[in-house]
Length: 244
Image 1: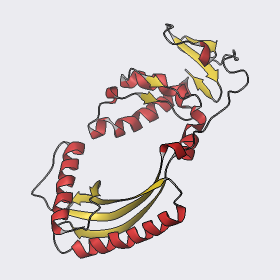
Image 2: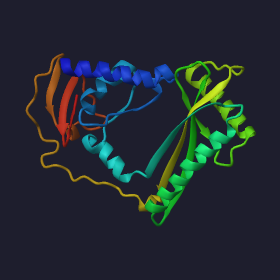
Image 3: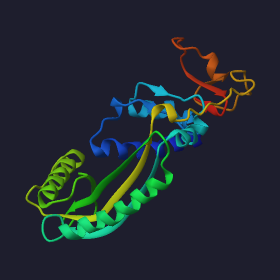
Image 4: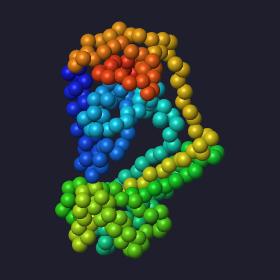
């Protein structure tokens, strides 16, 4: 189990960087164990984070691939544009967005299909002058004006306060990158629903590995029924996953 404990430690740091470091309490979330090795470390990870509920998809090894098949099409464009948010940069910002939006709409017209909804989103990577990291802030879809830039800057202050616990409303703000995202949103009835046939022998006993810490096995995962209490560490395998 040494390799599992090492994996839990590494993933724990990544989860804390995405939650605790950004002011989110991991105990407020449900842990989804995707990926072939996700179920192997999910329960240990949830215990470390005090997360009460873990969800293991039927086929975690192909979870991301199935999501890709059912997801909407999207493409991103990004352009460097280092300018003060409030000042003489309005024309440069508008021109940058305009060129990328024309490319985005041309791409959408090539990939569009019946029943799809086309969407173009705009964001800026903004920071306080002197910072070396940025936050992405949404830009309204209408024609950009000085008043619109003021609202974008206000959104940056608000986002900075949520992320880091403080904002500096009197500090000048600069934009670093402009980004445009083109999305082809499909109607629900036109989305695919990837389906996987159950593998032969699902739920059947399997040779028990060497597990430390009082682990028990073998158990086929489907044979551990909901609301049936079991105490201690158990190992189970079915389909493309091994859960501990």
